[in-house]
Length: 71
Image (cartoon, rainbow, N blue to C red; front, side, top):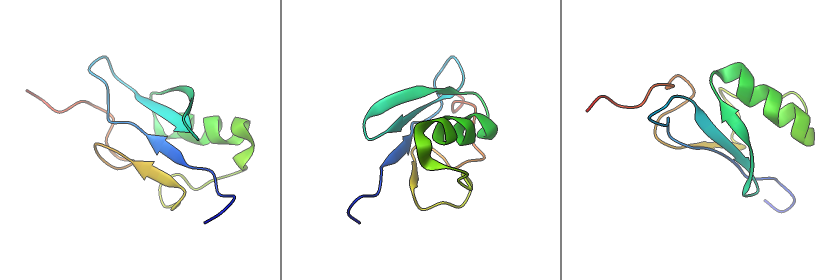
């Protein structure tokens, strides 16, 4: 859809947390679901239901995955 911003949440890092990007710009490293919501609010996207929004592409697991996979 034209005009919609692309949000990508990267897989959990080995050190913990997930990088959050909007349109390729890094907003920060989220340590929990609430961090993702706050980053998006600060980016001007308003109150987004980060668990169900189709705006967000979750890579390496959905909104319930915060730890890296065990070796």
